[in-house]
Amino acid sequence: MGWEIERKWLLPEDARIPAGFLPDGEGTPIRQGYILTGPTGSLRVRSMGESCLLTVKRGQGVVRQEVEIELDPVQFASLWPLSEGVRLVKRRFVRHWGEWVCEIDCFDGPLAPLRMIEVEFPDVGSAERFEAPDFWGAEVTHDPRYLNLNLAMSGLPR
Image 1: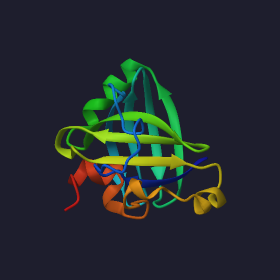
Image 2: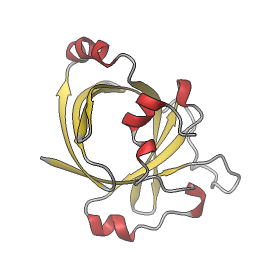
Image 3: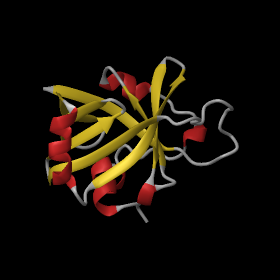
Image 4: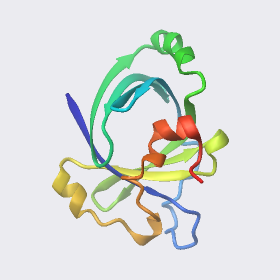
């Protein structure tokens, strides 16, 4: 069983953001759809650039269980229709902040102009010690409204 240790923040439009940190260009397109959802987790399909994945996620907060299985494009295409009505589309940009790799997701469609930044950590201690810069905005790691699943089901939080 794999584990994901991650924190995430809203990335507001703000003049304090350093030049070169904001996304530019096309980014990597992501289509994500949820096939099964429940109180303990979800089953999703995702195409990201040229790769396709089937992912099981369980839990909320900083540490969650995650299992990913690679799919070929034909398998993805056969599963994608099962996610109708519970989908999202976004573009991902990768940046660095110190030693950390940051993924900036810019949502399209009904979730635009939402932007979130995520950092994955090797252990809980690293996640707890990490200090995000002020310009990243509010941390939403523990806010279930900002889980991708809930965004796909309910739209932008009010």
